[in-house]
Image (cartoon, rainbow, N blue to C red; front, side, top):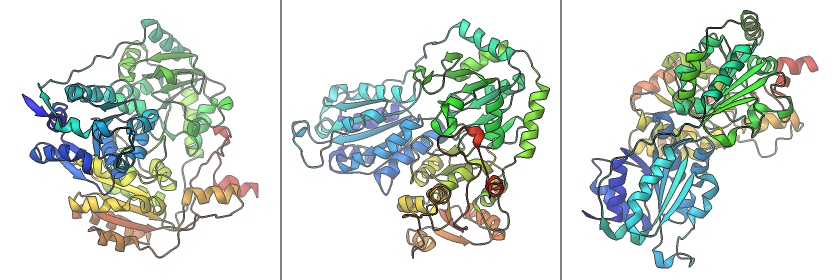
Length: 559
């Protein structure tokens, strides 16, 4: 049948099973929005307050569901407003398709009104980018975009379409999405070598990254830990792969990881990296990282092998598939002395905080208790992000959504909206610092417009907390531009944007506020006032070995 390019865009979205898109209209994308209007009963469009919010919402939707997230924007500033969200998705391997429209083909390259080479701008931060200048290739291009976004190591794909293509017509025929079979990149010998290394280990440690979430390998990771009798640490992106209540779980690794994880990895004789990329925030001083261990690295992306840390043995391919094979070959092993030592470390170095006043760790523990650990937690970036990772016990994957690689302030609220649209039966709570909240609080208008029942918790210490922490510890308390103690009233802002608001200043007010907010079934902001100098511990100084992790007790002992 003959369809316009705009209608083909909508039909291709339907082909791919897309039920929700996030975006903001404008001149060059008007034809697409007109087509969406006619299919509003099939595709739900969420109008965000800013295009960056649309990108983060598509990202949150994708992380929460495992499906491809979709965002739309017009040309010029509309498209460039997506860039930070696209980069965020790229760094964390999130499947996303960003559809933008550009000026008419004859106007390209002439500095026309609202013209930007968005495909060129986003080339370094996408898996692939297209600019469609012919309606006859539009459908196949969109299909390729979805295939690329979700295959292998996922990531964002940009499709830029000139406005005349959205108006032109061509023959369209529906095509069912193909399930692309991944080519096996590993050999039986690779599996044998991995198993042999595990059998020889006396002090094995498992280090889990976001690839384990993406591949859906959490049952296999838990089984490997049991078979190998090995402790498990995770990255920010790997939260929920291991049950946070498991005796084998030792917490996060890296700059703000637990002492148990950092010391244990530094002492192990075999480090098994599962879907992780050895980020600098995990590794610290690379020359001293896991220096006593052989390294087994399993990852779907061959480019990550030996990029940051040398691997003695590696296996390239889908983690879930590989672990299924390894677990079949691996006998039940026991390392009683090693696991007893790790248990001693956990008892000696538990996470702790000042319980005398209201704090973010206390808030996270109460959220965990009230929601029974079953909520989806999104975060912005900073101290609150680390506390959310440390003090909520994640027991399932895709329940902690945070900007790990890019560290995007302003990520969380849009992501929370996207997560709630993708998982409407889940309680979705965003944790933000007051600095981050200033960057995205306009998206409260999006939540109120559609009455999306999310809970926005603002941890308000009236400073840029993480930067201030560094200024305190390493810059002799020169608080340059990190004090936010002004006249902004977040509760009044929330009410002005159509949301309910609750201010919390005492510990005993936290649990009732959380329960009330969840029961309201509408967007609610909870502002929690905490001391300005609360700090995230443990901490590893930049460039130091992770075994140099210190906490407040260590600082007091040095004085």
